[in-house]
Image (tube, rainbow, N blue to C red; front, side, top):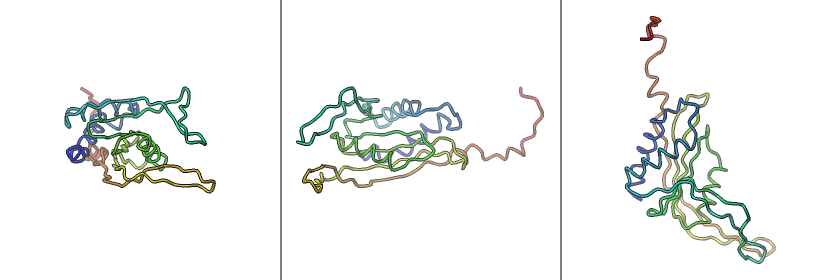
Length: 185
């Protein structure tokens, strides 16, 4: 896990920049496919993608109920490191994205969750990939006013960061100073 944490900023930036975030046709799937490849090459571990898991919950007697025709898909998982990655391709992430990742961690044996956002183009010209790493803590039991219990893990924030801004890196030349000759050869 230490090597992954150390190399993650580099791997994410390379993945994001190589797909050129200016391309409006890039999707979460494009980033997912290249990130999976890059993680396997650099960290030298098997990375699974789009793992489907039967959605289940508990009834009022705390018996397990499998919801028919309902599943959840984990974007990327690294079993060897106990890591689950949730990928986004949004202008910015919100609490909903964090809660989705933490729910997946609550219902699996993974110990680490990484939320990655390959930012979509936005009006601020902020083209960055960002990530947040969470570590699963102790199982907490909460009781409501009717005496029913609900179990959730506590989480600690291990790291969060973002890449260089692709826009600043590739647009360093002032376009107005480029001489236009009309020759496109």
